[in-house]
Length: 160
Image (cartoon, rainbow, N blue to C red; front, side, top):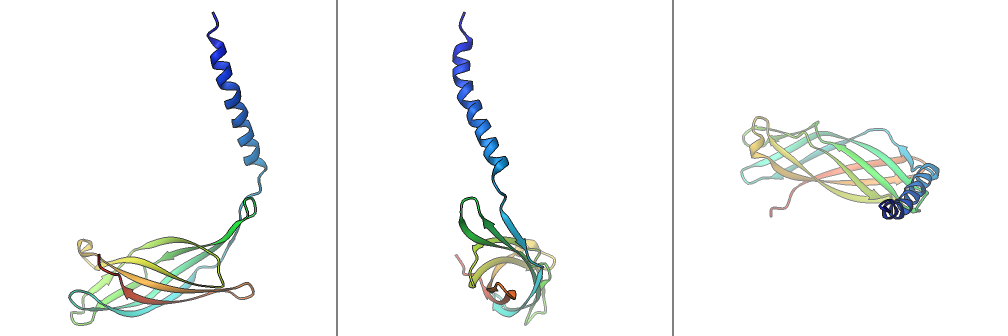
């Protein structure tokens, strides 16, 4: 009986491909990653909601990583890890407090200057069911000598 022949014909190329992938993975150089310090970025601005104007203030924390890919020579990537948890809002008329616990990760090509718009949810301090969305525009500047600098501007998210 020759039941092993079809199995061998299938397994040989599969095993050869698996070994080749394993060897390439083990010998390929890793991505070059340069991690920058966490930077506080001041958030200060007012947006108009459906019911009242909300003033936001505080600091978001932005951690940066520069990711270079020497294997495939793809463009250098900037990774931003943004934490909005220290940003607070206050209703201008009602005094109602608004909070956010949002965190996000953004990947962009590394440029000398880039404007990045990021949305984040905010809600009254005691009711996440009434959450709304605001945008922050990050102006990111990069200089190889001095590193990163960032400023922000807050705006209302467009309604759908």
